Image (cartoon, rainbow, N blue to C red; front, side):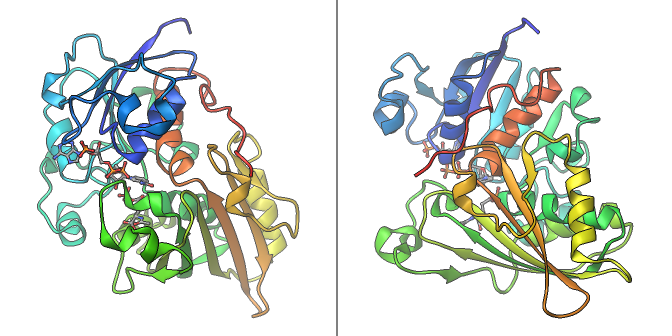
Length: 347
Ligand SMILES: NC(=O)C1=CN([C@@H]2O[C@H](COP(=O)(O)OP(=O)(O)OC[C@H]3O[C@@H](n4cnc5c(N)ncnc54)[C@H](OP(=O)(O)O)[C@@H]3O)[C@@H](O)[C@H]2O)C=CC1
Ligand SMILES: CC(=O)N[C@@H](CCC(=O)OP(=O)(O)O)C(=O)O
């Protein structure tokens, strides 16, 4: 494809918006046409981000209503939930890829319960394609509105869907322990995310219920054909980026952990970004940092009939901005890896 895709990034002064810009800079078919911010509007990207100091040519941050939408092919919403739906639902020209939670849930009551506010555009809730790319390839080419999954749901669903689809694990008894780097909470100032609060510590949170639970249950339920209940406990850990989930599941009668591992490897055999590791090798955040890759493996549990699945992603790449670009690629008929071939960064 020779066409250049002109993109606008709303929320480019935030972590996901900035990572989207980082990836878009080397995308062979993308022109960054407009970047927005709220409080930081009016400032150059090179002034508010250290890693863009060598990119003074990036468009300056403007408010969303200052953007000239003519000729913009796709807009990425990297905004807080509710703000995102309110802003994006007013746009009629560009195709929309939303990184917020606003178009992931199908049900307005569930959204109001988990997000503490009425949905600003409930008529669009069932119109979005749920953009877990490895499971949305058929719908993406015609999609006008794509809801990128949350970072925790991305890792959880990549790890669980092969087993649920094949009837190899019981959807009733899934227990997820999730760890996230601090960038998962966004760039806004919050006391809980100060260095002194986060360093040398691990904090569980969301124990009374986290908003990613209904999202994971919704998507697993669609595939299982029945209601699903999961147990999910996220933890904040002292690293900038990265996410790791350890998931225990009950295996269906006669299924072994090795059988589940083999089925998972077959499911992802053609997927350029999802890797089932060799037997016995444990996924780690350092295997994926800064990249769009996900690494997964399956281990037998000491309790008979159970298995442990471990998955690691970078929350800002496969967990948000990278997956958003992967979705854009399929929406515009490109190879899904375009602009996403960076190897992970180490050390
Ligand atoms: N961080 C992560 O790992 C992931 C985040 N997400 C979701 O992606 C979205 C963006 O997250 P993240 O980048 O971390 O957030 P940040 O807090 O880092 O950035 C938020 C961005 O939104 C802008 N903004 C805030 N309020 C308004 C407003 N009222 N009107 C217009 N713009 C506004 C901010 O502008 P300014 O800086 O000028 O205030 C900033 O550019 C969120 O919905 C988040 O939940 C999804 C997956 C992973
Ligand atoms: C560490 C941390 O605070 N993480 C965020 C999740 C980030 C994310 O993916 O969330 P959304 O896209 O749904 O906003 C949280 O727990 O709310």
